[in-house]
Image 1 (cartoon, protein in one colour):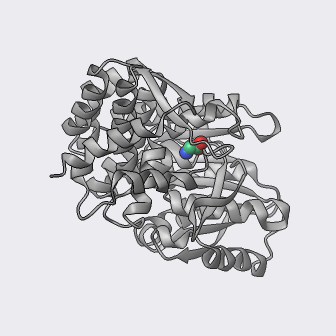
Image 2: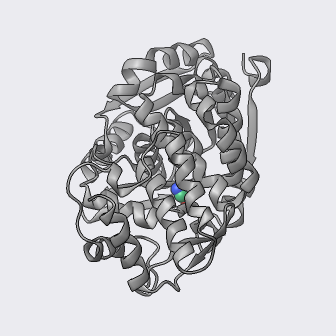
Length: 380
Ligand code: GLY
């Protein structure tokens, strides 16, 4: 069976990027029908090369292999260690050499089957192998479904900073199966939610209203609400990526909360103390606080952001991060490695209101310091 429409219902967001256009399909059980979705992309040679990690392989790899076999697709799989440390030169080499050893050709398909780490690494391996082979994203975390699997940013970390080595390489298809979100720990799910609420804040006040009303039910497992939220987030991301694929302008809006987040992740050693999505949530609250401090938005806006995050029972304050943090000056210094630095000037995503954000380099360092000092003071 090669017609995915014949298999089940799913939602589609099309990403119209000319000869690099692709669909993002969102629904329940898409992994069990992955073969039917992927087969139409293939020529006569029906085999795919799956890159995954130990956690995802244990839970879902057999299901994916069976689904591919049902559509007559043979699978080779490489399982890498789970965790952010895998996004490094050494594991990239393992992945690329494995693909070469398996004689992957230009027309073949690499499947990134995992969260953001696997998606970024597998996408980058596909980008550089034979100057670019096609790849399909099957994101298994909420964060990867609403953010990293869509838009073609691929890469690994340098010892000197996150995501500093990479390429833009768009996937040929994204399958966001919301069923797998049920296997995430509540903490991982809520970390992904940090990226979901970001979309409401950066450009859709009505979506943020909806999340305030429906977020707790969505976190509790309501599938229809999960599909709606994932689709809306992806639609917003696709619209921005189509306007600005290589981040010359508007795409930086997707980094709302990330300037603070990257400093906090560096300060906590990219460890379990702070997951990326948790850092995004705290970073959004700080970006709104900074916006209010600069007189750009009312004080109600940051209060509303924090109230919603508290309602969702996810991290929203620096006091939610266990252990020591550096002082405000040191945190601002950590922001300097951010990819949004242009001509040595740090850029922030600030807001005029909920759903109304913009990019600016016009932020006095002393105001950022004062926001961070106050936030650190609440840690006692
Ligand atoms: N995660 C931000 C972007 O894809 O541009």
